[in-house]
Image 1 (cartoon, rainbow, N blue to C red):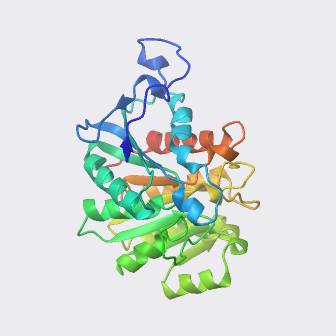
Image 2: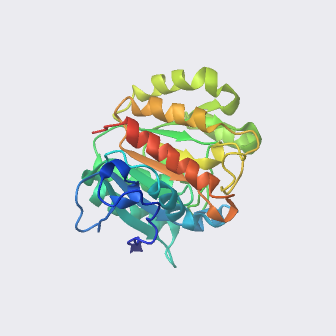
Length: 307
């Protein structure tokens, strides 16, 4: 089910009513319907779904994640980029698979109306929805998936959930490549490492990020036309990102994650970025949501991206 967001989510401090030099994002955002989109520099589409997290035996609450992120992004300073809010896709009785397909359709309907497309979760089952959208938009392009994540998410299950998305992608398309940055051995069973090996999944352990991430990205990106970038917030240390389904005690810093994103974006093969597992129920003082908003701000500020 698709729902428009309301202006009550986009609010903040007003320093001046008319001078853009004083503006914050909430003063310029446009609420755009998927059937009548207008072009903006930045587009935001929410995946307000935590059913996949529940099926994966995680902590529910991420369905409110997209709006929590919007609220923090709203009050950040305006940097001369127009913003379109395309609303949220949510679920009532539909299966995760049905919601993923609906999200992909809306992603395709709105992709041409922004230079950078933020896809906000919600559970990391957004990954398969993100992939379906890319395949619909770029049917003849080779897609490489880069997942900044503590987990492989290569599980097999009768029902799609937040831990199966990348196995679904690899099963669907043998030409897709998969690189995971930030893997925590303690959070992935030996079986999952075997699945990673069997599927030719490339990965960098969290302990090796500083030494190896840049080289792994360089080697991987050159092989593909389109890079699907997805970020699971549980890759971050719990001190920075407590508001996630599976908090990480030895996770990455925001600076490490931001540096990897910046490096990936420099190749101009990434327009759509999904950010998953934002769970306001367990956040502290909005810390995690504000971190995500800062990542979005940095991406928006650095990139005039066009594919």
